[in-house]
Structure formats: C-alpha cells, structure tokens
Amino acid sequence: MSTRTVIRGGLVITASDELHADVLIEDGRIAALATSGTTIADAWTAERVIDATGKYVIPGGVDAHTHMEMPFGGTKAADTFETGTRAAAWGGTTTIVDFAIQSVGGALREGLDAWHAKAEGNCAIDYGFHMIVSDVNEDTLKEMDLLVQEGVTSFKQFMAYPGVFYSDDGQILRAMQRAADNGGLIMMHAENGIAIDVLVEQALARGETDPRYHGEVRKALLEAEATHRAIKLAQVAGAPLYVVHVSAMEAVAELARARDEGLNVFGETCPQYLFLSTDNLAEPDFEGAKYVCSTPLRPKQHQAKLWQGLRTNDLQVVSTDHCPFCFVGQKELGRGDFSKIPNGMPGVENRMDLLHQGVVDGHISRRRWIEIACATPARMFGLYPKKGTIAPGADADVVIYDPTAEQTVSAETHHMNVDYSAYEGKRLTGRVETVLSRGEPVITEREYTGRAGHGVYTPRSTCQYLN
View 1 (cartoon, rainbow, N blue to C red):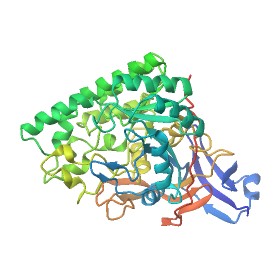
View 2: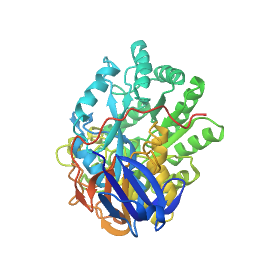
View 3: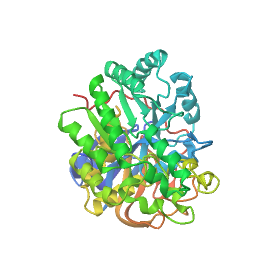
C-alpha cells in the first residue's frame, strides 16, 4: 500500500543548500521538493501532513561508529541493538554503522554472522557493519575481498590493545595492501599500544590507580606517533586511511600534513573530545571512570584545534564511538586499577544536539553540521545519496528539528541503556521533534512510535571520496 507524507513550511538544510521548501515523500523515499507556498507544493495531498513551520528539516544522522553489545574487558556494552537504535532515533540519527568483530583464530565470516544475529529484527533504524580485523592471515585477506563484494567495505585495525585487537605493522601493511586492491577502506585506532602498556605498568607500580591516570598514560604524542605511522604504512600500500576518534591536536596536525600532500587520509572526531576534557577524568570519588574511553579525553586546549579541523576539513566526520558501560557494576570493575575500567562512553543520542550547539556557539555553520553528521559519513562509507541528504530518490530519513527548543541533558531523561550521562546538566539549544525512517515515523512530536525490526541491514558501496 502506497503512503504519502508532506512536510510543509520548514527550512530544508543539507550539506550544500538551505531552502524553504515542502518535501513530498512516497513509498519510503523523497519524491520531490518544491518551494513552500507555490502552486506545485500546495497541490500535493497526502495521508500524513507534518507542519514544520519555524523548524529545520534535515537528513537523518548517520553515526558511522557505534558498538552495540560489544564485549570488552569481561563485560559488554550496556546498549543492545534494540535499546541503542531506539536511543539513536531519539537523537535524530537514522542510520548506524556498527562493528562486527573477528575473534583471534576465527574467520571474518563468523564474526559478521554473529553481529547479524544480534541486530536482525531488533533495530529501530537502518544499520550496516564495518569489520574489525583482529587476526590478519592469508584466509582473512581472501575474506576481505568477499566482504567488500557483499557490502561490508571497511575494515578496522588497532595499533592499541595488545593481546586483544592489536595488529603489528606487518599485519597492518598486509591488510592495507589488500584494501588497496579490493576498494576497501582501512579504519585505524591510532595509539601506540605497546608503549602505552609500559606506561600503564609503571603508573600502577607507583600507586597511580585513579581514572585520571588513564589519560596521563595514553599520551597525545603516542596518538600522534601512531597516526603518523598509519599514514606512512597506507602510503606504502597505496591505500586510503580513515583514522577513528581523533582526540589530540598533534594527531590532527599529522592528518592535515598528509592531506596537504594529496593523500587519501581522513579523520573522525567525537563529541566527547569537543565538549569534555581531562577535567572530567579527574572528577573525585571515582566519578572520572565515567569518562574513560580510548583515545582518552585531552586537556581543554585541544578542543579548539578539533573544531578548527572540522572547519578546515582536516577532520571530516563526527561519530560517537558509542560504547556505554554502566557506572555501577561495569565502570566499577576498575576501582583500584584504572586499566581495568571498561573503555567507552554513551553518546549516540546526544551527537546531533551537541553538534547543533556547535552551530549556536559559532564553531560551525548549519550546513557544515549536516555535512559532518549526515552527508560525509554517508559518502565515506558508501551510503550516499540513499542516506545523508534530502533529495529525490533518497531514503526518506528525515528529522524535524526545533532550533529554539531548550533542553538539559540528563540520565533521567535519556533513552540509552546506561545509568549516567556524560553530559549531565549540560544545557543545549535545539532538539529533535519528529523522526522519519524510510518515511515511517519513529519519533512523533517527542513520542516514540517506532518498533524493533523496522530497521534493515544496509549493504554499502565503497568510499566515495577516493581519487
């Protein structure tokens, strides 16, 4: 049965344009746009009419870095695909790309199948997968080719976490060479994990056990060094590189230099690095554990350089690295030993609002907001123009956004399955009002009207930025 929706009177904002237009949706897709008040727009009829007067009409957010139900350090992330995608929708995100994990000694396919089983039938919004490659060998390299053909076109490697996800330079080079051949994109967690483990051991031996030492041992220089090394390995392999969760100004400088040299090198940062700092890690009574993630939060002066990188396009994407662990019972595993605190923070629900605050505060423009949160992640990971824009033929993933509404972020009112908010008490201007996923209302005037199972798996083409 065909359904039509018309969104009237809003300001449509995409990465390239702002226009007062009505939007016609048919059968889950954008059918047309027409200037509000014109004969064409006024002639449209539909079963569902949404009044967006005084509101923004924006593409649904694309969060290209989430970890639902991820096992880590003897526990697992607190959000399931059901709770996590519902919370994402509340925050105006309509597509996530999560990470399937290869176990050491296992096949990529086994990991991918396990993540499909977790997600299928449980998601409120559409989803795709990246593949974490933990064990590079001849079989793995062959499997990478097959996965790219199937629409899993990006592969994450770790220079950190020896004994868990770590790959050495030889393994990284082999995977990069394979990606250069098959069109895949290597995503890198760039921190020198071998050196960090030495500093962790030394800190604990000195009795430095509080959460703030997590930030002190994971030094910005070791992020910059690993970023530099990853860039050079990618250059040798002739492969593109996407560096995840960039937190340090020294790492941004490495990316900027590589991009100035014309290399296909890309960088992502996250809201926690734009809004939080080592001051949070140093909060007393073990409260700092709430802010333990890797790469770690940095001193405040790094924030300005990250915002600058987003303005100058040395950083292209803001994702969340959403990997929530409850304070009670999970973060507390690290009392007396910061190295045992599960690494990760909640944020999938907050990203679009925090970045809008960046618009309000003058850090970025409205169109840049949509670019870094919707359009570029969709292009980077082969989802554009199906996702990430409002244009004829695109999926009708649309958010009605109230730019003047005020809200105070709190664990009491958020929808993530975690017992604290990283932004507790923060006042924001702007709030999601209504969210459509493929034309279906998931959030209707601040009420959840979606369902588990509406979201479907979305295969991806290769990165759309490669020259």
